[in-house]
Image (cartoon, rainbow, N blue to C red; front, side):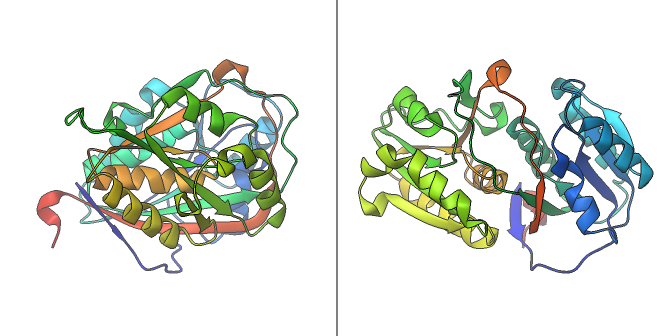
Length: 307
């Protein structure tokens, strides 16, 4: 299992396109921004939370020839593997995945499927939402756990102290709550710098106490618009930390950073990747696409295919 970053290219032909059909208006943003994309497409629903913009999104996908289907979280990984196997006669399978509205659970299933299947050239697209202030309510973390068993890391070397790399978002008390829950011996913070500057102010304000608790060297900025650089920074830091400590990554913040964390987890199999979720306590909020779409192209390879 291995990954290789690919040079960004203007690509319109895919063997498979995967979108999320949920309640956020930006579910259709990538489809609308890139109408030239071709290839058989699926808009995958969750089977619940059919509210806000859901019906409008479903109608728009179907109008554009994208097949709507509902797949449960439990069945999603197997569903995706079956779709890839129908294309298994190809030397390399070209897949577009819109990650904008995928949960981290499903994003983890996508990365795991591609990593284990191999022979995948994936183009991940992420639509940044227009800025909207965070809600006043503090949503408790119902789940703080590895994304899946695949991302749980190796359990060896338990004598090493625990380290945490935490991405920051603008949800109130989310990051500091997880740090206090996990109690790592040391931790580093990844701060997103967005093309939409209003986000930057909120992230810094929401996490001010946590940022003040670490030295400057433990705070790493990354540009949301440059995922290759973000992945490089995360990969480099993780490589250093894991040589001395048991390393976990909690990718709060933009979904694109969660993707980077999972790619690091594929590369370093002893590193765990976690998720924090409010579960049933989460309040659905509509998010509208800003018109800014960021792409990351990744090749997935079987170990024997790597040169």
